[in-house]
Amino acid sequence: MSMEVLFEIRFPAKAERLCSIRDLVKRTAEVAGCGSELSDRIVLAVNEACMNVIQHAYQDDELGEIMLEMLNNDGRLHFRVVDYAKPIDLTSVKPRELDDLRPGGLGTYFINEIMDECDMGHLEEGKGNYLEMIKKIS
Amino acid sequence: MNINTENKEKYTVIGLEGEVDLSCSPDARDSILSVLEENKNLLVDLAKVSYIDSSGVASLVEGYQTAKKQLLKFGLVGVSDAAMSVLKLARLDQVFPIFDSLEDYEKESN
Image 1 (cartoon, each protein chain N blue to C red):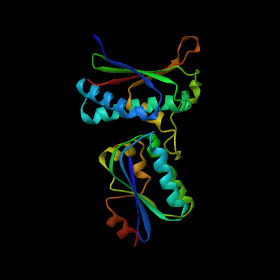
Image 2 (image 1 turned 180 degrees about the vertical axis):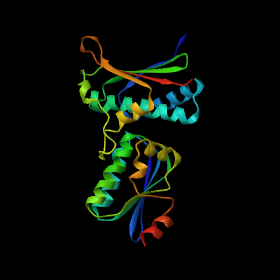
Image 3 (image 1 turned 90 degrees about the vertical axis):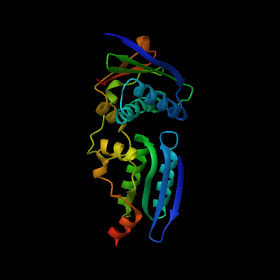
Image 4 (image 1 turned 30 degrees about the vertical axis):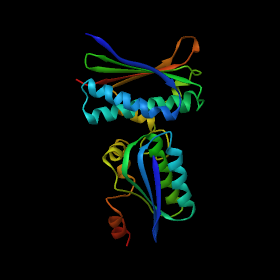
């Protein structure tokens, strides 16, 4: 078993930064062995996770910071998205039913559909929130 | 993202180009809703969309629902593979009227 850190990056919680984050995740996923279609799916899920932080954890406060880490653990890609906002109500984060046609609420559904495992929680002493996602690629 | 609006006789076409994400989906939403406010049928051309996230999809859903309430026609045209992949993931390809081309829309609406 070997755990390889593919990257760790900190960036401002601004929508304008998501484009470069997507490029980074896509390139890294492809280098890790993902095909183009799988890489695109992974990019969508990670983008949605960061969007959730920007919109819901920081509530569009652009002074916030996001830490994104991507690791490869023997063919399992691990993603950890951390924010330093107030602890969110974890019970409020749930995917909507697809039959419930309304704008919004799709991001968490996308993450759950694309990733194999997801775990959310609070950082110690109420210093923020984390989302861990795992995608098996081999 | 670029937004191009073209007025036809019986409908308006909004063409979205590039990446439709959180940084620009509010602009797409505003363009879509402003056409519907003028009581015009609307087609959103997604042929040149290279990426769309849930915020972009939400703009389309809002447009679709607004049009329905106002008894206007709303559809998507020339959906790129990248956009279709996301719509299928949300199973919205079964909800939105989707046309290969403007000609197909015109044939079906006549």
